[in-house]
Image 1 (tube, helix red, strand yellow):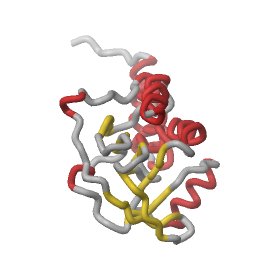
Image 2: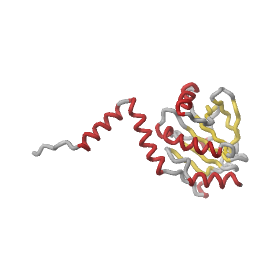
Image 3: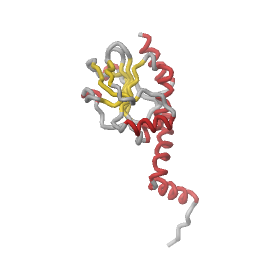
Image 4: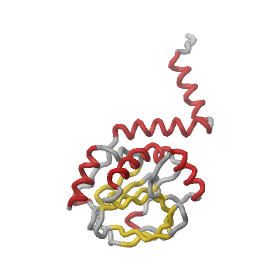
Amino acid sequence: MKKRKFKISDIIFVAFILLLLIPQTRTPIQVAVNKLKVVVWSPSVEDEKNQDQIVPFQYAVTNLQGDTKSISVGKGKVTFISYWATWCPPCIAELPGIQELFKDYGDKVNFILLTQEEPERVQRFITKKDYELPIYFPQMQAPEILQENSIPTNYVIDATGKIIIKETGAADWNSKKIRVLLDDLTSK
């Protein structure tokens, strides 16, 4: 029986697996892999016949400062809802794109980024990453149509309550396709 020689690719593969086992290196590697997906994956608009309709509602939330707010969803303004967490590599990978989108559309679109984490942890994360995003903590259960067990899950809901996009997993929210869609939705 012939003895197999180790190749450089074998060593790299073993090193990669070992790095994934170490908690300090696992998350950065997972974020990097998800960023590769974000580069090529733009969210898809639902076919018109598959677009669900929500009943307009007021989303009761608390912001990072502890102030309670009620944000209208599906009534008169386009809404971007994101369910995310600071420990979630796909969430971390797509947040820079959401930040860019918020910078340009924050006055035209309701951005609601929801997390269930401790406010102090979220504040540390946001400060470290230098994000200026509207982060909220839900104070009510979302309508059934917006309940999803996977994060990140993001929705683009038009001013009449139609779910135009529902995307689970990391995606490029700062793509030209999304910007054209938001331009169209906010001009109506």
